[in-house]
Image (cartoon, rainbow, N blue to C red):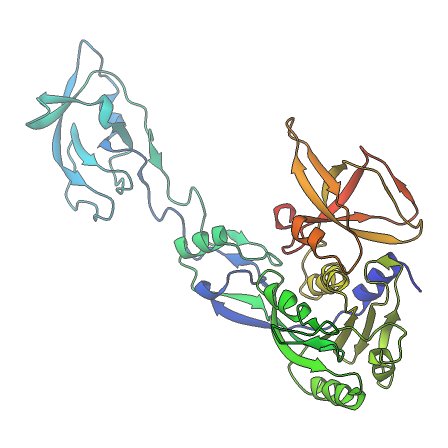
Amino acid sequence: MINYNQAKRILKKAKIKIGDEEVPIKDSLNRIVSKDVLSPSNHPLGDNAAFDGFAINSNDTKFINKKNPKYFKIIGSIAAGNKPLKKKIKKFEAIEIMTGGIVFKPFNTIIPIEKINFYPNKKIPKSIIIDHKINRFNHVRFKGADFKKKQLIIKKGTVIQPNHILALKTLGVKKIKVKKKLNILFFSTGNEVSNSDKIQIWKVRNSNSHYIKSLDCNFLFNFKNGGILKDNQQKLFKSKINKMLKSKIDIILTSGAVSAGKFDYIPSVVKKFKTSHYFKGVMIRPGKPILFAKINQKVIFGLPGNPISSAACFRFFVYPFIRNILNLKQEKPIKAILKNNFEKKKFFTRFIKSKLNTTNNGKLEVELLPGQESFRINSFVKSNVWAVLTPGQSKFKKGQIIDCFLPNFPNKILD
């Protein structure tokens, strides 16, 4: 049996190739950028007003003071979306301008509407009165001040979020190149597993497939349910692997039948293929009997059948593998202060159903919940993070800093 760090090293070396595809921006949410995205245009496209007011040429105010005010004739109005006026602008002329309106030469500064003195009055404005020097470029948003043409918008390896889509649409990007989504084929195993709502006491409901399917958008994969493999269906499972090797499926996930029982046939079937980067059994809890194997450019994960073991193994084995082959950076843990003592086997890694909270003084604190057995889902419902207790230490004390991971989402906040 290997430890968790050894297992992670094997997963990292077992990388499979995933291609790229081009998608419209509207379909890019949660996809991974596979090529740097550059701005096709400046933003803003042209100099424009940051305030409602009047545009003037600041050079016309050089010699203006309270003793020598000037009247600037109002020659028109420019709203956001209007074309600039095509006329020769004379000295001491002003144009009304709205926020977003284009500032065109020789106008080069904006006086906010709140600071305007009208002549003869506000109701019948013909001119504005200026009695002091005005600096150029006041309240002007410059062409390319936010993004210049060909400037980097999004780096390769970024997961597209709604704020990226806003930027891409604003800048006129129509399509981007992203990594193709992984295709996962999932099998539940065991005569006890049932898809029925009403079951006998010797049956269990097929919840693992539904849980992992619910993660497909958050963890960047396409999910296909392969159904339930019964206790005597070794040949069927072998044929499913053969079909996978010729298909677009990248990963087979199984749930159950990986331990050492009479009907735990997943390992023996997998070993009939030419595998590499194989392991079975890791010093973790929950999920100790987990299996992994690479067959050509496909991989198989044999997850334990208990719901919590299956969930933990997906989070800490399958998802890191997905991140690696999609060229994402290693996920960063959330650091939190341990709220209660806990004891475990020294050389095991423990994934603990836990509750993360913020203290009154703004610190993150994590409580390790009671009910850590792999069959207990009550504590999983109450949890909002997995706390990870590392090997090499058996006693964890209140006040210690430990790593935490969100169970149903990547730790995106720290990407």
